[in-house]
Length: 296
Image (cartoon, rainbow, N blue to C red; front, side, top):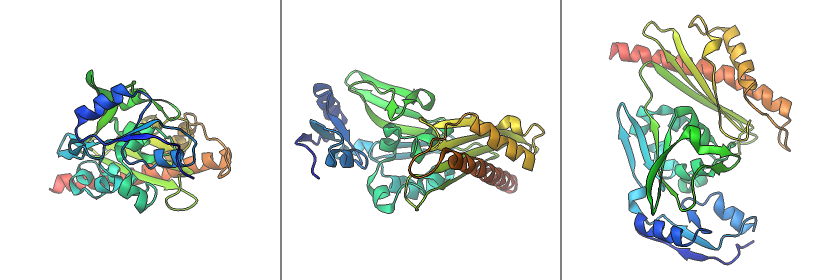
């Protein structure tokens, strides 16, 4: 099918884009378009005007600050961020999760900021944004503001962006010393939306004991879900019982639902299995990084 008729603008500066958006509040902003264009083509949504921001060079940046984090603009493609060696070194969870985003064709065109703003809890990047405690910079004709991940996702496919605001940049903090990360997901086919996905961050103290554990979940809640699992490892050691307890604790914060692809019970079991697997992998990664820091 073809989309309904719409008007089209392609501004070359952010100032022009913000002015165009302020003048046409019913318009949609086009970056990667991997969600918007199919919806328009199937006429599941009707858009009177598109404001294409792909010609705005200032939104194409990837800035890496060692010890601080990674900043990336609104038209940075998944593939660009995934391939960025410095970004991978400073925050490896970005690379790990981006490896699971859809197919190569979509990664080559889709934008990471766009995926975050789309706020689909079945997508990897909204969860990663929440797990890492990132921030989103948005702009309008009235100025700029930063939104924390905690305040960004307010409902299914819904964010706290206000009318006339365009997301221009995302920031995720660097991985601290003696921390490790891991990510894994289960999908019917590689590139499909995950039936369940889990990312984890494990931090160790100077003696190698577990200091904190956090895990984020994909496709098991209406909004990106992050659970603090630290209390399951009271002695600071990774134990089989601790991992089982962590999996059960996570489920008390999740909302697995049935659909044509999986039952709620199956999704819950996937969450259990992936929690134990990914937390253990993140713990091993933290240990390896801590040892590397000592010998460096």
